[in-house]
Image (cartoon, rainbow, N blue to C red; front, side, top):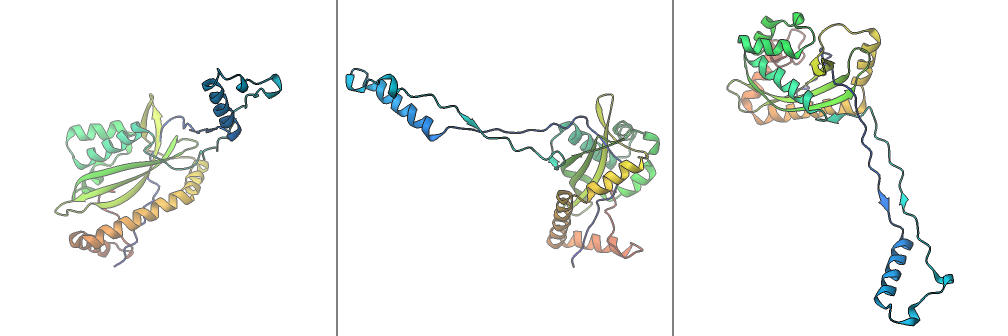
Length: 248
């Protein structure tokens, strides 16, 4: 069975401040400069030999080092795990979802911009069969309008009594409040929504989505228990389309 798992849905999350660009320049030493250096060294070794002395017409003119023009980095390219504070925020958020105690609820509230929009009953039901989330990676792109970053999060869902993790991917919008990144919950302008929709169609985002699909298929093919879980989940989906894991 080939289960196509498409989950790049626009949840509601955003944030970090100030994407920097890193460029690397290389200095190249021309052959002529190297040859001049070698000749100069030979003269020093045989300085006592008058035949090696040079008149002014033979003086070697220093050759300037050439510097390659740096290739600009694409500012809209996905950046993997580029912002440790975002990775920490996302992992904290997911880990808190697994537990429903009072402390975890407070942690969830602190992770988002508007805690009043959290549906704790819904979250509790969706993590009923989840034991853990592992192997987080955050792929970020610059945001616009109300959001600072669009972050695509890949991770493995650990399901009760199933040894193999189910690869998954979600998208969050991240924004800063009080100099800290938070998951954005709320409405965005049409302009921001259009920007997000367009970003989701970027080639590198589509590639990341396909990799998540392929990884899920491999995991299902390698574990009969995981296959049965997803088949049951699919059968319970009214539209007949593959369902999302209960964690979301």
